[in-house]
Length: 329
Image (cartoon, rainbow, N blue to C red; front, side):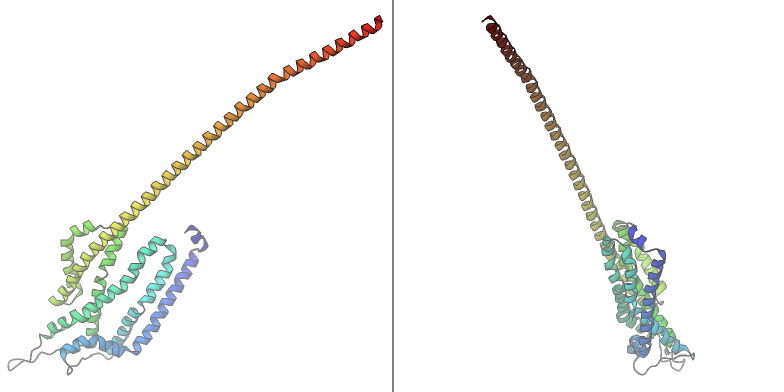
């Protein structure tokens, strides 16, 4: 990573970030134009739960001249954000991934895919289950009236309905990110499965309070959001426990590898010491052999010199005797 930082200074990082943001914003604008072209169909899809409860002979109203236009713009923007979310996540991952290690990339990759899937699951839950029940509850306050009073009938506004629907979808989608958040915190060592299990009763209270703040003031929406939060909290405990087991197993394997490397190092040092001792012993033996050869050579050399000198003396004496004999004749 140090060499990578040397190859890419801070300005190149900023240029890379600018390029990633450019592609993400461009994808948002393109999807916004496409969604605005089909905005009536998208808004009709969002209105369908209310239309099913109210019936075909009912209507929606708007009281400001620009209300429908800005409502359609908001619908197109929300739909574009949802459709272009994979592009945003892909560009974010392409910018962050080169700075991560291989194990960090493999750890974060599942959460990158789980985030939009869980958000979609939360939106589907509120659209297909919570909205029909909540709209029936709100429409139950209508009254036909009589001789003593006026009729009470719902005339839903276009902008207010969209704001309520987006609030519910955002609340459920955000709450469904709870397993991702708690699992990441468990991986980082901020929380543990045992601490989450001990604080379960506090989590139940916080879930109902959170649901009461984010949902309309009706019992169906609050319970419909609080119960999934509690279930997701229990799932988070299980996932945190699994993450802790994987981390403990990985640490045990790393310790075993370190111990194995230490053992190999000790064995190598013993082998080197043994080789050094053998070499020293061999050098010592060679020295003893050299000393023996030197002694042998030194012991034989005087003997040969003595014999040669005695032979030379004998030859000289014989020559003198021969000279004396010749002179006497």
